[in-house]
Length: 284
Image (cartoon, rainbow, N blue to C red; front, side):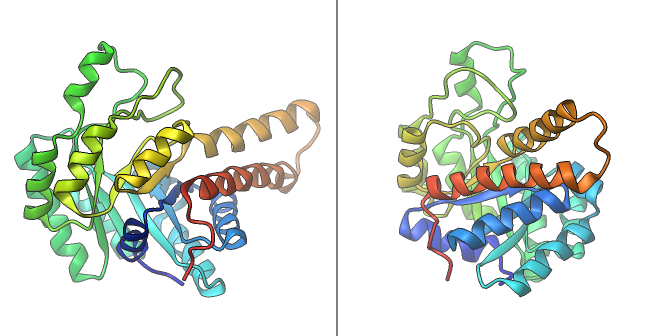
C-alpha cells in the first residue's frame, strides 16, 4: 500500500515506536528493504538522497516502490532524503515520491523558513508530506571540540516556531548523532529531545541513526522520535559483501551472484533495525 510519511509517522508517534527510513540507490537494496518489512509486517520508508535519486533515476526508484506497494499490503512510502532546494523537492514529487525532506539546516533560519514554506505549499497541494529540519547533524569530519557540537543542536523554541510557521508534517532534529561511518561514542541529548517533544507535538526524525546504542535509541523513541534514518550500515553490508565475494573468487563475473549475496546481507540489517525500532507487526 503506497502512502505518505505523514500517515506512517503519525501512527508511530502516537503509539511510541519508530519506523526505519532506509536509503536505496538501486534495485537490490530497495527490494531487500521492502522484503524485510514484509517479512516482519512493518511499515517502511524507502528513501533516496539527491545523489542517489539521480544515480538510479527518480522515476525508476519511484516505480520500484510503487510496484512493491501494489503487491504487498504493508504501508510503504517513497521519500526524498536531504533535498537541498525547492527544485529538487519538485523533481521528486513529479517523479512519484510521496514524501520529501527539505534540509535547510545550513541556511540562516529565516531563509530555511522561507524555502520550507514554499516546499510545503507545493507538496501539500499534491498530497505529499514534508519533513523539515532545524539544527545541523554533523559529519565525522567536524573538527571542533565535543562541547562545540551542541552549538549545532536544535533549539526547542526555534523548533516550535518553525513548525507553527511552516506547517511541516515531521521535523528532523540534531541531538547528538552524526552522518556517515563514524567512530566514537554517541551521546544523545535526551533532555533536549524531551523539551522539543513537549513543545512541538509532531513526529520527530533522527538522522544519522546508524550505530546509535540501543538503550539511547529506545529513550529517543519514547521521547518522540518516530523516524530513524539508516544508510551507512546498509552501505557497509552491501559493499563489504561484494568485496568479500570478489576477493574470494576473482574470476566471478555474473552480477547476480554477488549482488544477490549483498542483497541478503542488506535485508538482515533492515530486519534487525525494524525489530529495534519496535515497528514489527505494526503494518495496518
